[in-house]
Structures are given as structure tokens and as C-alpha cells.
Image 1 (cartoon, rainbow, N blue to C red):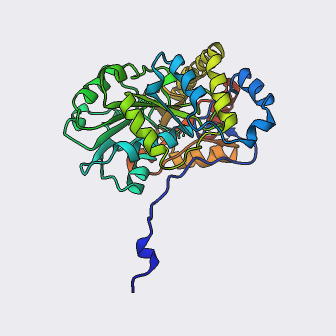
Image 2: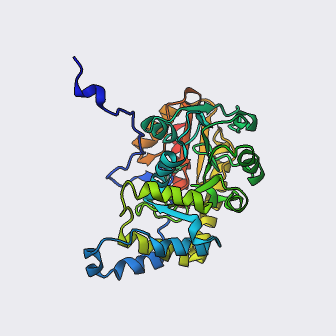
Image 3: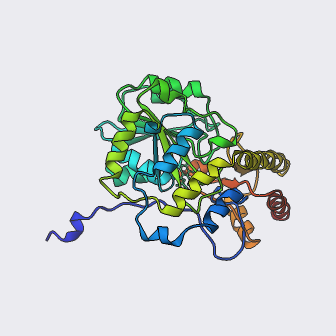
Length: 350
Ligand code: PMP
């Protein structure tokens, strides 16, 4: 007999990194180890409680205006959402509506296949080479859309803007999404391509370089027509996505560029120091341009290192799939002290 179960939308969900309650050295979800700008704190402490009676501005106008100014683009090119996960999910629904498969790397942000499954979007995962590089020829045939993070996650490997321009120019039949969650840590943005091509959209987040994962702010920059279609989908789903406080702190963060750039420089310096120490300990890794290092040890198993670090209160991320990355650990960059403790702990374990 047919039951209601046959009419259910089933999906295997994304598994987010652990958020332990106890105090640990948390290098498992690529958060920034530094707090957001003090200007963000000022805005939060001066919030007018009465303003919370009312719904937030559904157009998110102040934040969109501030982002447009920050990136020197027109307001009509900016869309905002509840973290880049929200912006990406909306983008999948809006832009990936073809019967042809969408394309993305086999080793990449593990939410992409989840959204594709959820929204019944056909997809093909293209194998990265042994150095975790993308083979551009894999992205040459007509398709339903393309999504690639730059730098890629969890590998940290970045490609130049010209690489993406070739892909975008070769695909007038579909939208290309470039997920720039980690771009601020040393690679080049493709935002400039949105002036030249109407089929490319860049997705960004406040969660990493702006130290504001707890606020959930993401945004997209693209041709005004793409942004309009994206907004139409968003307003057909939930009008009031971003709350009043978050909209205000999102603007404040952009006003303190000096602080923002200084903290990024701190993370990059620590990352480069950590690379040297990990190599000394027998780890190998692709050259990371992000705030994490994707590393494999020459003799010790990743699961063993992962468990031993956890016993010492140090959390890193381990992905068991696909099989060929099962021996890698993704280690987020913390403060200098945290990374020194990590290296000490690894010396004990190995
Ligand atoms: N894209 C990539 C490549 C990521 O690693 C992440 C972080 N998990 C996101 C998007 C989502 O970030 P958020 O929703 O916090 O903006």
C-alpha cells in the first residue's frame, strides 16, 4: 500500500563541523581566531530595544548600500542573505534550473551535492588532479551551471582570475557561481568579471575574514538581472531573512577596513609559520591561500592524529569522503599561541 512516506522529500543532510560546549582549541570550522572590529561591539551595545518591535528592513538597504560602496559597484549588483550558505542555496534554486547537469569538483565544499540533491538538480563531480588542481577541460562542455570555490575548500588551492574568465566566457548558456568564502586570505577576486559577463555571480561571506560567523551574513555580486532573479526567489521564500542587529553590524564591519586588513595579515602570517612547522613534522599539503591547511602525514593515519588531538582538546576537521582525502586533516589557522600548542601536541603524538 502507498503510504505518506512515498511523498516525502528525503535528503542526506550536510554535516556541519562540531561546535563543542567546553573550551577547546577550535581549528575545525575555519572561524577567525580574532574578534570582529570594535565598531561592531559599539553597534551591539547601543542597539535601541524598541527597534526590535518592528520587522527588519526586508530590502536590507543599508547593508546593500554599504557593500556596494565597499566594492565600488552599483547597488543593483548586490544581494544579501543569512550567511553564504543561504545565498548559495538561493542561487542553486534560482540559477540551476536546467535538465543538463551542473558541474563542480569532486573535492570541494560538501554542501554543493546536498543542495543539488535537495533541489533535484542533476550534477557531475569533476576529479581534481593529484595536486588538487582543477582541469579546465573538464568544464568545457555545455552544462546546467558551474560552481567552484576560489580558493577551493577544503584544499585551499586558488586559481587566477583568467582561469575563471575562460570558464565564464565559454558558458553563455549557464550561470557560473564563484564561491569566494576564503578569497580575502591571499587570492584574487573575480568580482571584476561581473562588469564584463552577465552569467557570473560571486558569493562572499562575513564568517571567515570578517570574524562574524555568529552573525550569519553572506552576499552575492553579479549582473543586476541575475540579482533580480535571485531576489524574486528569496522574496518567494522568506522576506525577513536578516535581523535588525545583524544588518547594522554588517555595515559597521565594513567601516573599519584598517582593523579588517590587519587581522587578515595576522592570519596569513600565522598560516605561513604553521606551514613551515607542519612540513618539519612530516606533513605535506597543497599550498593554501585560505585560513586553513589541508595536510597529510607521511606515516601516521589522519584518524589517529584527529582522535589524539581531540583528547588533548584540539579540534581539527576530518572528512572520510571521498576516499582519496580520507588521510587528510583540515586545520584552521588560529592565533599564534593556538598554533604553537597544536605543533607541540603533534610533536607528542607523532
Ligand atoms: N562556502 C565555502 C567554500 C565554505 O567553506 C563555507 C563554510 N562552511 C561556506 C561557503 C558557508 O559559509 P557561511 O554560511 O558561514 O557564510
